[in-house]
Amino acid sequence: MKKIGILIERERAFSRDLCLGIIKYAQECRNWSLTMLDFESLISTSDIDNFDGFIIRAINDKIVSTFSETKKPVIDLFEEMTSSPFVRVMQNPTKIAQMAARHFLQHHFSTFGFFGHEGVIYSDLRRKAFVECLRLHRKKCFVYKTPKSTVLNFEKDVMLWEKYNVNKEKTAIANYIKQVPKPIAVFCSNDLRAHQLISVCHELKIKVPEEVSILGVDNDEMLCAFSSPSISSINPNGHGIGYKAAQTLAAMMDGEKVNPVISIQPSQLVSRSSSEVFSLDALPSWMSDALVFINANISKCLSASDVYNHVKRSHTIIDNAFREKLNTSVSKEIQLSRLREAHRLVTTTKLPFSTVSKLSGFASVQYFTRSFTAAYGKSPTVLREKYI
Image (tube, rainbow, N blue to C red; front, side):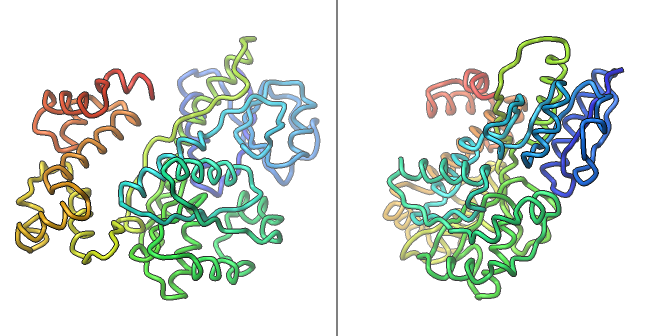
């Protein structure tokens, strides 16, 4: 029986997902005994010298030093220590940021922001990737500058205890969100930051999502639901990261060579109320409502008539607005939404293509396959092999 030490904070949903992924692997291999270690009581290698291997979040230099001294196989799941001597299994910040940018661009935003913890590596990586993705689309990003005093407290306030209040930086956040042009789409470094930004917007009587559309990361279902409006969020695939970390540790303990850095794709973007709006300059609210309706009901084999009935305006008015502002028609917008949803399901899930076809609103799997291949230049099978 292999004895495995786990040093992962347990307050955050993402960290718990990591643990669940590790547990799944341990249950499958049947010869692992897992022990949860504690950040506060870990003092020296004597506390952990009877373990065969470790999966940790090396959130400070002391932890790196302590586990280095064990000379045992270690997997590090924390992006902060870029010079970590351990094999690292981590999120893919570029794919996460690209998913965020694509979501906002598809909602026709032209002004963007990033709200994170400046100086914290995982946040900085997401910011850089988001800014670069927008740059390729010739879009500017308004980045929040985090007060240094709050960055210094990041390890305990956020990583270990996930404190929700923003008293120490409320003025800075308020100044940021008051000064940026609106409507604006703000990508937050995690769900906690999204929750905090929504709270400040409420105090300032700034409407979310009408004036500030907000997207987080972690898909913490409890935190997202407790916020008002509920938070749209990207699931970075903590379960998959934890499982891959355990699988990699097993290989290391068997003497196999492994890649020093392994990057795991995010699983999906879960759209909720905080970003369910389309930014369309000089257009009435009914057009945003029409686009939200299309996206929310894409699995129901929508027709243009369904949209006309929902909006309760004449076909002519609706068709002219879609042509003038979006250079498309209602029917084409429905088809584009179907293809976007199909692309998401093909590249982030292992669902059968018959199920993908139904969930994205295609009348048949044959029609789905033809349309998908024509739109993306690759069949669903070929594209899935590239991502999964």
